[in-house]
Amino acid sequence: MSGQSGTKQPRTSEDAFGSFPGPQDFSLVLGGPLFQLLRRTHLSDDALAQVRQRIIVIALFAWLPLLVLSALGGKVLRGSVAVPFLLDLEVHIRFLVALPLLIAAELVVHRRMHPVVEDFLQRKLVPESAIMRFHAAIESAFRLRNSVLAEVLLIAFVYVVGILIVWRQYLALDSATWYATPSVHGSKLSLAGMWYGYVSLPIFQFLLVRWYLRLFIWSRFL
Image (cartoon, rainbow, N blue to C red; front, side, top):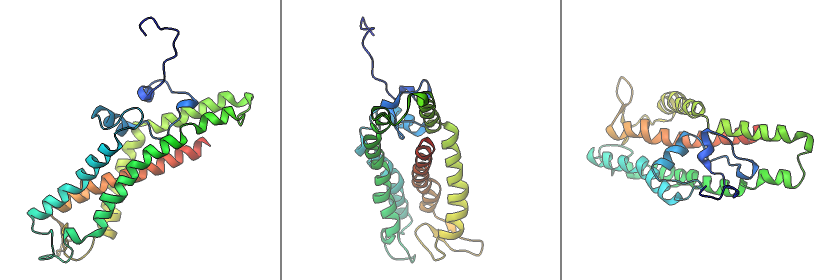
């Protein structure tokens, strides 16, 4: 404080696992283990800056190894497989278009919704008799947003349901592709397929289902 004990200091997401900010600091995205990890790796700050760096790093981490491993396996262009990597438009759209949009949307939502909860008080939408309940609802929303258990359960859901059941059983193609080759014992994943199924797809699915969690938190708060 350095002699400025009377000066009000702005709250930041340092409160993510401690005391909770007030209505003026309400955010659906400034919290959770992944957010803390991004801050520690300097891919984000308390205001979700460096969005371009996050998009480049995360999108390339999901997509670039697929290109490299497919090239090493000779499955980049049409040849030994029916669906080579460069012709799999679904993969490129997922990781180079949809994934960046999921990341960029965090900054948009944070800026748009940042003043909304405080407006509830300024516009007298919350009666005096309900102020304590209002602040309790904010703290409850922050606890769920910052929950380590919630994100761990999302990761478990992604791998158990999203990958092992939905993708492996229903979405993976039966023909020879850059990520798998059919066999009598089921599809055999290539090195690119292993990265795709156990790294790239889970990253995308986790970011997607985390948005559903945030929608649930907002609906529950309202």
